[in-house]
Length: 207
Image (cartoon, rainbow, N blue to C red):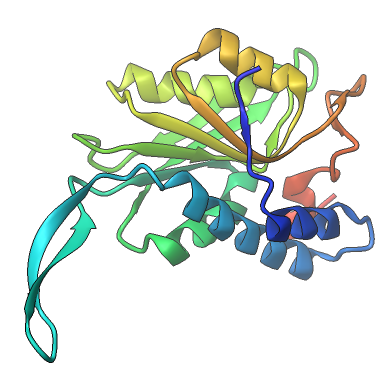
């Protein structure tokens, strides 16, 4: 399986806190934002740089700045919204697109209901969703972006199941997957085990 698990001690510690069933929505949201910010730091190591002439209070110098057009963060609604602010905390210049997908309770397949993107020319895209379970929604979201001519795509999640990773590796081998944890498996209802429950419900306090 092709996946990079970001095993920084702070990330692992905070994921454990999120897994606890007694963690309330407020703490769950805050932890998710913090973990996403830590993950954003790790996954942006390969951003291209260019020289820029600046003047410090003492003298002129040549510094570095990120080159090219800015990134686009694309949450898969609704749970992906919980990861956007963590990304924007480090990259406030990033644009934000949205993809709305829900899982049909009978077929377990993703159904699109919304897709809106900013200007895509020359931009790199980061799709965010806390859970990578079957991989159906993530794969559908990636397909939607590719259909619009977008090529440089990363997928970031909090918790991944092997089944979801295998799905993305098979259907989109060019898309790199980053996760804070790789869990054991899916249960009969396609929930990740041990997982952390329904991320959307825990973020927004719904059932």
